[in-house]
Length: 153
Image (cartoon, rainbow, N blue to C red; front, side, top):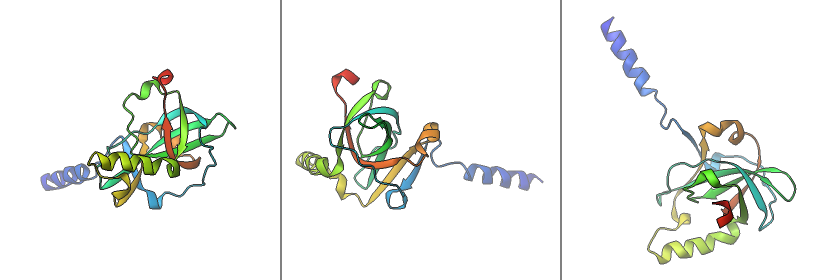
């Protein structure tokens, strides 16, 4: 009986989730319908996933769920490695597609001797378990960035 209890404890400990706050899905496995968000559109932020920091080998695609103020659609914006530290004061951001921003970001990073976001061999979408009620829904999705002005901080 004692061995059974020890084995059960080891089994339960081994079943512990890898990360209690986040769920990670490979970008290639993440199926979505593409959102048509215009460059410069104002997005009212409802949630931000956060997650692990990008490390050069893995590009984490953080989620912003928000309302496109131009048409009222709720959208998901996947932002590759866009680090946000003060999430409490994010209200609205200005959208830029990844096609428009990737080259500028890559040039800035490589000029500082850092690895390009595009050099990673893996892309992973981050889901914050605290916001699963909104992040798990089937929102139309765009890959890009959100810029936040001083008025939002």
